Length: 160
Image (cartoon, rainbow, N blue to C red; front, side, top):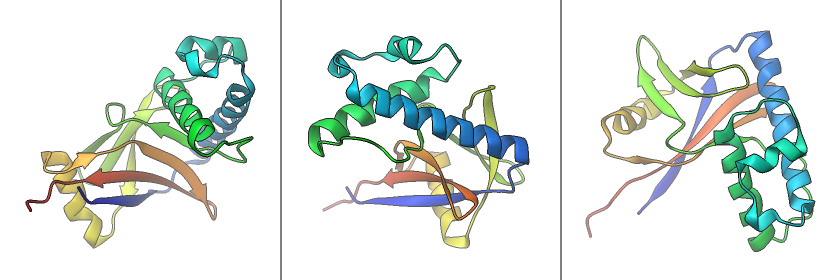
């Protein structure tokens, strides 16, 4: 099954949203580094976040971070993370078409729909995600050169 990753640029996020995404990324990185050194990392569940911090954080992001940290520790023998973006599994990430394409995911405040900038070749793939002909993977929110992006891997079945 071939896989590609769509890099969708978030369409002009407001300053408060950018600050919220930044706080989420910083908190996620700190939690991942704390979890990496935790003695019971292999038994970790979303309730372990309460030991790390008393702030609210979406449990969907916590669960995906736990999964990523376990994998990185086991397979790449990671010692620390410089920056780890917030990940959303395919159940918590939804692509919709209104006037613009929007992607909704859980944040610190609530689940929000964010418009994305689409290039012509991405429109066809986004339509296939919406109608279910391709399978969407776990999305990742990250910042690059002062712009926020959401990376969504997609796979599809090829007849052989």
